[in-house]
Image (tube, rainbow, N blue to C red; front, side):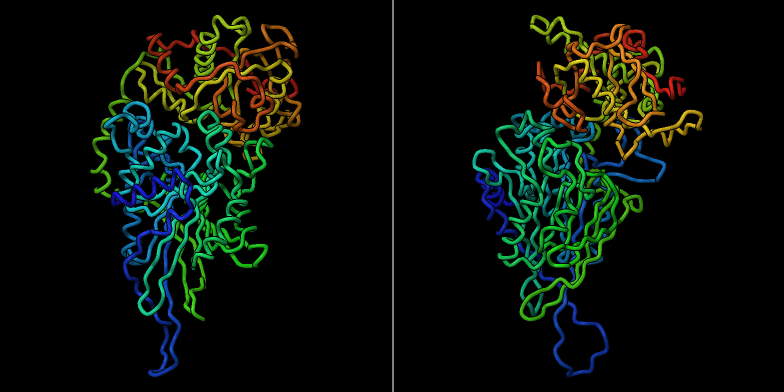
Length: 606
């Protein structure tokens, strides 16, 4: 963007001034279509019409290329999906050619700068915050493609506010967050909205407002970075505040870009009074919205129609999956009548990036960064005595997950030396994040270990009792579908009860226990022991846990409110690489143990 424009945005981000986006650059003149049909020459004047297309992506998570850095190969899956902004760029060019670039808008609904080794590298290894540091690959790609505005996602805060602000300064588009407020002034810490005018010959311009909303869960998930600095009220509350303002400013069309799913559910229980996935509630409760680009949930919604409870009008929602696999299109038809533009209809649809090739302009732009990261993740850090895999880790105690808990135990135990907690037993949790991760026998690389721990979580030590850990395990065991003894066990249908994701199922090391899946949820943990004896409910433990879980992610009981004994900012993934590097040889005898098993009425399932 022009230098003076960038300074203006930067200033508004600090002051929270809502007027920051009213000066958005107007689009080139658009073609206005007369009503189609064979009207006789000299008939009454027909109303002006205008067609607008709003394109949207979400949850890009650092995917520029159709490349799997963990497998060191082109990305592929059983569904035939393709990924990456290079593909999105091709689709966007197609739409702009079809509709006329001056009749389109390109948005994103957040979670941009975290998720792949590419984004990790430029946040931690060669950080954009360093003096004379690089321009973030996602800023480069999205600038080149020509995004108009992007909503903040919760993962934007994973590397701290300094990294986010640096990324913001490198973008030629605003990062929107109407409900990301300065904790002291309660004014927006980022631009709340973006307004763009589309000129129509013979009629007033069409004024389109985009309101950006992010996820209240940031206050929990990235508490270490945002506590006392930023606060994140609910989406419904802030939409109800801003949408009328946008309408009073003359907005003919209001689009919300929301980093919030549509299910009306939350993963953080009652820790916050706000709903995590509230996009459909915003549509239902807040009048004046025409369409919502949905994010956060990583699901595919071509079109969802929600009726506003106050006006009876239809609000159209769409969510384009994630990782740049889909592009949402909102096709608006407007008509100019009685001195103003009215939205006559909105139709949403999706386009699939597997139908097009990479845009060579984008791949060439970031070829050096891509090559640098490929070299980085292929560094050899040790040797494995046997192949370790997560294929069965959801329902069998797998050594590869024990590696995570062993590393966490060792790091926390060393950190507590010399403290009053040094004598307490240290146990740890870990989740089977991936179903396809593998550390092959032989040379072990950074990418092998990164595929095991795909999130940028950090480590926290909490103080829990035996009774609290029992409740924790019961909650975790809700992940399994109740399965009667004697019935056939289908491992594909055994897990994810009530849509519980794999990352919200935890192993707990250092304890012995059985999970009886024939029993109802809440009464499945059997024969819970510590050091071979029945667990003492009053026994205190140091619990090594990732920051997502420690801050309440997944709504596991007790852990969020438990006393915090220690924490750090180094990623668990990095700690695993350090541990393997120090050992040199990755041998299961150094970390593997069978702590738990699935049973039915006391008999092992496997």
